[in-house]
Length: 300
Image 1 (spheres, helix red, strand yellow):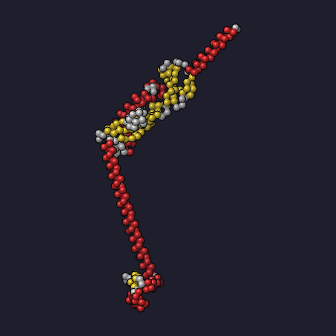
Image 2: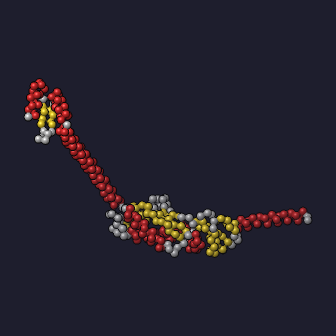
Image 3: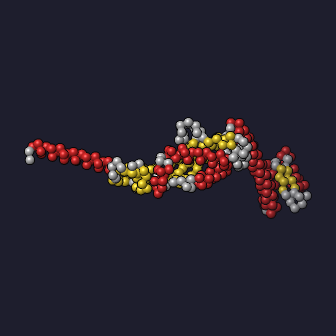
């Protein structure tokens, strides 16, 4: 084989190698973790769903579209930049009182892995489904459910009870709406209830008044506690006096000792007796004889 032929063979082999590598690269398909691969032939869904990992398909003719099957959230919020849209995007509803209330909501859902091909056929992309299905449906459902709730009161829309009722009703209604769709609705979270300014101010005043009442109640409770403490102390003092009197009546030695101390110190001692008690008094300026007389008179 001449050198020219050898060169031609080498070039041909190199071209075949390059073509093979390109074909291999074009045939290689990778389905990411957390996704399902939907197979298409010439752009049409075949009905075959692939699991995460590497797959080999006919180049050009066969393509794979990855569908994220992990839980997703869609948020509509009055706070700019917080929801799926950069501008303020809460849902305005009317209560049974006719008041307009802004509701922030987050929808949590996931695409069913076994229906990933149906999802691609019906909606193609997640964002398209959110804009055309989830967004208008949640707006309609919340407006319908909120129309039966009060703006203020015990079970008003802004209370925990009202919010839970709205969440539960919206979840049930949305599940019915999505029953024939290739998605599973996991939760509906009412994140915030924005009342009109006038109602907000009224509620603030009511809350302030409640707090002031609680402060006054606490003051009354403290005064009652102190009064109760004084009563208990007085009862304890009276009981102590009664016990001491009983002890003196039953222990004459103690009584005599107290009497002697009274004579020494010029004190007045009240000694309870069965007949009502006697008073022992010593006049310090009168001396011992006067004390003795006082004893005699006291004892009768």
